[in-house]
Image 1 (cartoon, rainbow, N blue to C red):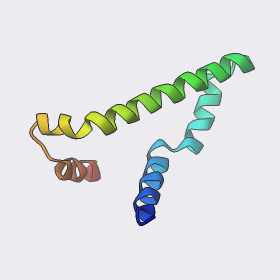
Image 2: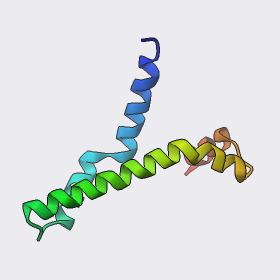
Image 3: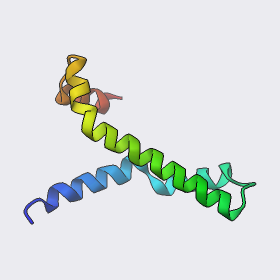
Image 4: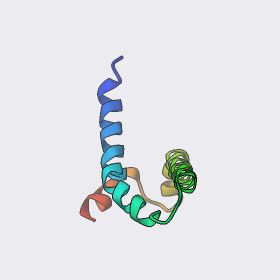
Length: 82
């Protein structure tokens, strides 16, 4: 139970990065001519793609950074600057 603050911080950061509330109008405008079944399928495929990228980044992100000769801390600083 002592990990809850870390989980909360991770979930909040993920919510801010993915921003589903801003993505919803974009998704609806992109799928404007779709039927309900097509829109549901598009949402499912998009969710799978996002999940795959997040899992891949979580598993291979740090080794990839090490392979490029940088640290996680440097990457965070660079992301903060951007």
